Length: 558
Image (cartoon, rainbow, N blue to C red):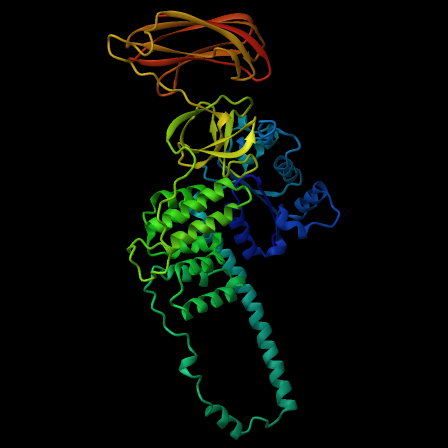
């Protein structure tokens, strides 16, 4: 049987990792699949170091599966703000190099992406990955993965069943021979008549039919009854309890489903629900934040909206509350919610709150931009929680626009506990620390007799660029340009160091650079000229490099 080593980055979402591992274990067996995490600790040799055990496991494996999700190459170390792959001791990098050195069969798995990382975004010793044929999977393709692996599973199952059938037949034949020898004539006609006349089981022993007429539909029961095999007995017991007590309140049913909820249950709920739209909202993506936020914002029944909102708030504010638990609560509330029912449902014992939930944080949505990050890869992480140790859901580039959903308290970073819940251009919802975002209010042109920002004539600004895009002194200036008007900008730097330096960019109202230049050598000057294509407010912005301090001077004339 092939032996498989799964190489992955722990900080990414575990949903894909667990699904991939689950499918591989079902096919090849638990002993033949290795994934390096705390759940696999029992597979380590007692007393072995990570390095020795990893080397041994990679030597042991026939195949190395490399999980490469979106922005895999841009995952940064929160302390150094550098891409982890560029660290020589990075575990993922070391595992891949070992797999190459031991000439293992490497199978890259591209998650939510269509291409390998570019060569300039990963160390040269990892360029070999592109030579291997990859498996491409999207968020909605776990089932496709299962289908792809199904023929393999079926063949293995057939072989196992064939061996099992042969063994059973052999045992039956041997047992028959022994019985014929040791117990001749034991099955008398009277015995057979007794067996044939034995009464059938009473019809009353079958489970009673249940009328699911309350707000709880059969969907939660389907979830409970269709869990993994190790939960079957518990699921049957809980289902029987519910069937025997049709007057249970929504609250007790909530506890019932909470006890059984899991990602597995969520997927089954999604696949089996007759209400596709509601199921899609529940399982909007692998992203818990999106699922919970969607439930909160789109659920119109007051009782469920309120309780679900409290679940979201508790999940966001309490770092001790696991993401899984929050998802369980959210899924439960959605399972209890039937859009076709009215608030006057049969189960009148459910408590109805007197007021809706009002978040204490600032919910005014606005647009902000990602600050200029200090080091490569110049990206900021979007986290699943307002914590630097939380799972990374996405990353955003310097200057990228995000929509702020709300401000929220979280882990203290740089003496600030303010985090933003944001939505990226890729519709990913997560958390980012406030120090990584800036808000640039765009001035509007006033009436002809007054002006919010004076029309461009000439001006200058001076300062010190200390670190990449971190400044002492003035660093930007808003300027009004009318269509067809030109502006000439000159940048002077007194101590630039090759290949680093200071740059100046002209940014339009859409936060797009329309012109720029930079200085990277000694005491140098550089300039550009731009003719405005439309009337509006532009921004001159100074930019710098990460390891040096520069004195700069910017002047312009229109």
